[in-house]
Image (cartoon, rainbow, N blue to C red; front, side, top):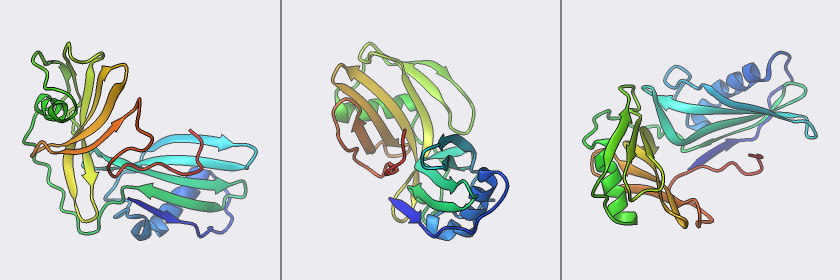
Length: 212
């Protein structure tokens, strides 16, 4: 899921971030951003393309303190302060009814994902956990080569959003999965083998033409 606006704004003075935020506010409906009061849009990354004369700004959509999976918001600003383009991944559906209930623990989500992608671990343990909105948790098992980070995210579809666990499961030298599991049903919503897949499966966003 992506949304894109390519109508340049008028030239402007001042900081490119200010110009970008004003542009996002003006086009929030087309970009799938409900409002600047509904979403906090912290600036996650800012970098310059000196040859092109552009400032690239990457914001991150959040609701209730929880990040939107694949919900990056990018704006590209020229030297004259003109915003040339903005794009979002996983736009927030206009009729979404977010539900903050969580039926599965992070450990249960790891087991649900592993049952689909490999085999359920038998010695899974919680290494650390936090009480914030995203309930960031680190788990470990001898089945995984590295500790498993987990956090709650919003997973957007065309019509609604689900609360889900985002996981990183490093199984072996050819299987390292980024996975998203429904936080109530245990359904595997997204998986991407970082070692093998050319394209991930699910509604993840990749910005075309933006250097990493």
